[in-house]
Length: 65
Image 1: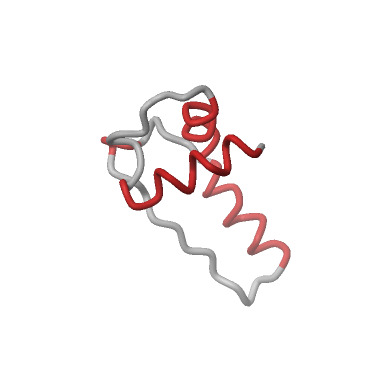
Image 2: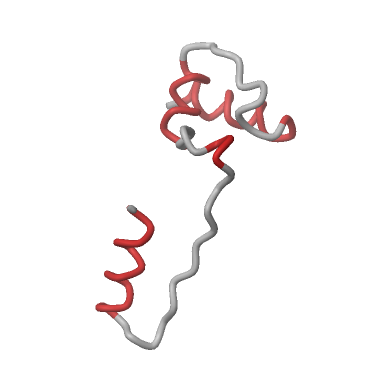
């Protein structure tokens, strides 16, 4: 819903641009970057929430926030 609203706003601001977004798998639809950052900030496991290649970066950024 949010992405659809943003696409309509972008079109109103500049009709020459098209906004594209990709829907996530239902498996991950409950996730948001805010949730992931909060889990990391409180030391929770990010296993299965994000790609293992970026876990370290997320934890580092969350601890510096």
